[in-house]
Image 1: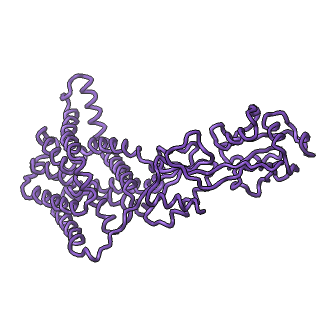
Image 2 (image 1 turned 90 degrees about the vertical axis):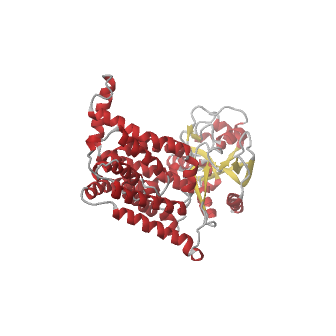
Image 3 (image 1 turned 180 degrees about the horizontal axis):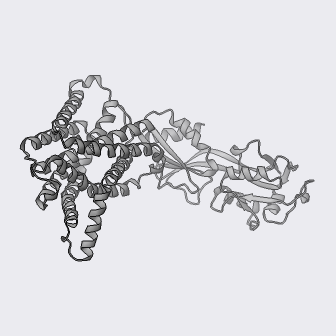
Length: 487
């Protein structure tokens, strides 16, 4: 999903959430009609967050009524007179109206999820919405106001809200229909519809949010999705204001006609011209976590992924990459326990580095050991340079640090005066700013701000760069790993 697609879908969600034309239908049909390739997991995250945007819109618009209802409701409970005040009774009516949707949503959850992937099913449900709106205008007497709402009215509107779990059945359209069939006037039915949407939207959003955070691409998706969420909230607020004013003077026929036309257009595209429509392939989404020592692989992964337009790969630089939270990880060095899949991408040399102005050209492994154990503290003990030696290493959990200490220190303890650099970038910055510093990093990080010191005798300080996974990659993922090995 692009930022532009996110904003467009956010505007559509905000505009259609409260108008009786089904926001879920439009979120299903818009990508279908425009041929947008939106990854299923990212689409789910957007659906959850954009719904929260419109929830904020309705709360902001009705904040005075909601505050009064909640305040009266709580006070009535404290006084043990739950139905003593009109506003408290109204709160109970909103809860009653929420129950049918909650029960029905749980019972038909799998069928609903299947319907969300079917534009044809969505079109059929749009026709149902059109029929409901037409019936409400023909049958409803519209003789009662909001203050007369009873438990029978709340239950009726709650039952109509239950069927709106299917994409294409408008939540506002069905609940307004339920209210008008109980002879509520249009503005009163709409107002109760909006207020009763708050608890069901909040509960549904809360449950979906818990599922959303099990996704591995939430943090990567937020920068793209946030503009759409904001757009949904703003447009949703304006839509509520528009509909309440519209219903004060106009019937619902225009919305019924719109749902009918949209459904027929979708059915025409689905059945009328199938040979002219090219179905876009589903985008496969993967997540790769990369250790900081080999962060440069992020660009290489993007280069490899560009070969496959059907694939989206989200990368994340993590101090401790997790194969449980990703499709595969890229790490420097072999872990203590290898997972079921491990592939060597390359071998990385570990270079000893100093400030460019430092005069030392070579250093022996023994002197390096004495330096890192604290036995050598001044540069004049090694070269013509003067000054205190600042020793830099990485945190203990870093594979580069573990390997260096094992290969160089030979079991001797690291000096307690060593400075810690969290990653190679920080190591370069530290060594380049202090002429008395010394450190080490993977050779691929070398640049003009630091200088490599040769080891004597020549030593092979090398570590493998590995791709690790819980299982052997298949399909595009296997192709990406193979591409990284080629590079």
